[in-house]
Length: 80
Image (cartoon, rainbow, N blue to C red):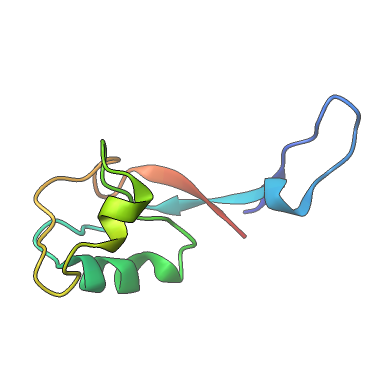
């Protein structure tokens, strides 16, 4: 169920509307497959310690994900 995070001023920004989602298993998938698996959940895929430019330069079809955080089936927050 969506909920709102309200700023100290009482204003609600559209980006602050979030919902809790169950994190899918993406280990063993290519980056391309993982991005497809999480897109409808409004989750983002990032590689720890890598810049956006380095990430964009990867071969999405042939780079396989070996670890993930948060772990699968944990609750995470995505934007509504």
